[in-house]
Length: 472
Image 1: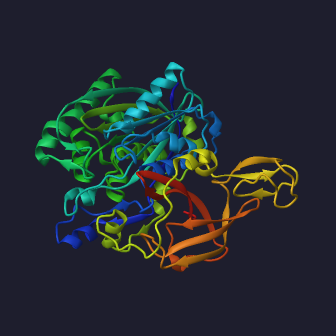
Image 2 (image 1 turned 90 degrees about the vertical axis):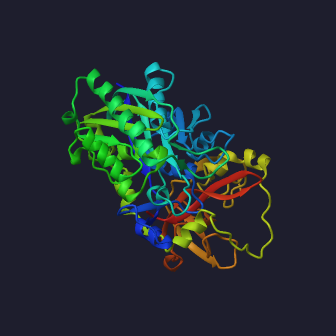
C-alpha cells in the first residue's frame, strides 16, 4: 500500500479582505472573504519549507529520501530550488531533489510521480510540497481571488494514512491562463472560452474515467477536492458533478484564495483533517488538462491529526494594515531608499562553504561540558576544550527574547526593523531579525520561534536565512 503518511500546510500570517482591494480602486468586489498575503520576506520556497516543517512533525528526517518542490513562481528561472529547501530542512545529501514547475498541476503531478517512485522501490519516503505566490495586475479580478500558501505531503508505504489507489491524467492544449517567462503577471483569455472549452469539460471527463474504472459514483465520496479559479466556478463544478455541498466544502478558496500549484494539495490537507477511516476522497486538479486522484483513508489518519494544517493556519492571522502595505510588500510602488551604505554583495563561495550550518541553522555543543553555542565554535567558550563538539540543529529549538532593538532608520520594507537577541533552549544567545511582528507587542521574555525567510536579493542571488517571529 502506497499513500500519504503525513501532511502539513502553511498560510502567511497576513490577510486582506477582498472588499478592501475593491474599495482601493472603486471596483466591484469578487465575493466575500479574504485573501492571504505573503510578507515581503516570503516566497514560494520559504512557504514550502514552512509547510514541510508542519508535515515533518514527529518524523525522523533521516528517513526522508526524496524532496519534490512544485511551483509556478520559483525564485530562480535556472537553478534547482529543491536543493535549498532540502538543505534548510536538514535532509540528507543523498535525498533526491526535483523541481516541478510551469503548471498549476505541478503539485498533483509531483504527488503522482512520488507514488510511482515509491511503488517502483527507487525511494521510500518522499516529501512533496506545492507552493505559490502568483502576481496579478492591479484592478483585475485575479488580484482579489489570488492567495499565497503552501502544502506538504509525505508519500510512503509504511503507516499509510490515506492510500492513493489510482490516478488518471488528461492533457488539453489551449491558451486559457498563462504567464510568459518575461512577465511577472498571470494573464487569462476571455472568461467564457476558458471555462466552456476547458474547465467545464476536462474535469468531468477525467472524473468519469476514474470513477467508471473503479465502479464508483458521486455518492461514494466523503470529500471531493475541486480546483477552481474562484468560489463561484468551484461550486458550479460541484453541482455539475452531482455532488452535495458538504462533499466539496472548502475553506481555502474563500478564506485564502487561489493558491495556484498549492491549491489542490491544500484542499486535500483540509479534507484529511476531517477524514475518518474508510472515507473515499477524490482530488480533481485543473490546468491544461486534469489530474484525478482517488484516495482511501485508513485508521492511521488519527495518528497524524496533531499538525497545524489548514485549520491551525487559518486561525492564526492578522489583518494587513492597508492596501498600500500590500503594494509595498509586492514592490508595486517605488520606495525611497534609506540613507545607509549599500550592503555587501552576495558571495557564492561563502554561501557554499557554510551552506549546511547556515541554511539548516546548526550550532555546536561541547561534548566535554555540554555548553551549547551559536555560531559553531571550535573552542568551547566555557571549558576551553578544542574540537570536542557535536553539531546541533537549532531551527526547532524553543526560544525567548533576552533583549531587542527597533530601528526606524534602517533600510526595511516594513519598518521599524526589529532585531532580537534570543536565548536558545539548552543554552546560547544570538541576534536575529524579527518578522510577522507588531512592534508594540514585542517584549523581553516573550516566546518566539524560527521561520525560514529571505534576507535580501543581490547579484541575482536570493539570500535565505532564519528569522524569529512570535509563536503562531
